[in-house]
Image 1 (cartoon, rainbow, N blue to C red):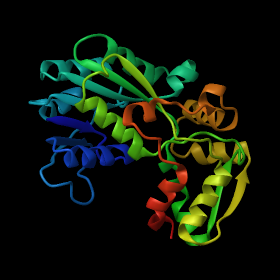
Image 2: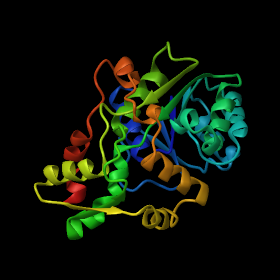
Image 3: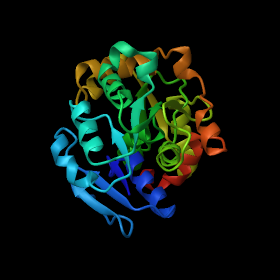
Length: 273
């Protein structure tokens, strides 16, 4: 049995579905009951990763665990996993642990805890997600407009379906123990080009307006703490060469190229119409 934390998120939902399609027994963990039905046969456990003891009922009988960076006690979460007999842990982390360690110390603590001993482990350092474009869904539906800073700075955003597929491989297959994978899309895309891809997918023009850094900072500060805001703006505006580089890891593990942003936009066009 495989436990998926963050099961209602963009990656978690895809991972639960892919595991079920592969014939695995799955327990889905999220803080709240998911909207809509889970795939048939999936057990749901409501638990907050900030409380490791609350996660324990989901772990009993589990062979493998997909873990998010959430809460403040990675050692407690890993202790619960070890005590429950979990043999394999796959951690969803961030590319920033490698490229901006001073700004991603929280995720680095989780990586260190996972690697400290016990279950087999794999770390997935994800780049920016294509699904971040859902932030444009309401303004595109209502006004056919999108806004963002650094309009022409490119980053190789990755499709959550590809992150989930790599996670599924690491959870189900041997040969990934002790590995850290960097997950990106197949090419760098800019905010302006991503808006254009959505416009093509919905068959309607989308006007893109570039924000100033201060405008973007004020918008992000509504739902991010200040250090995360500054780290996010730094990645978006002045990415390092490693952050702009396309990683070979998705193709190496899945045996195919990662999906381009345009494919994500076509698959999710209904959210923007």
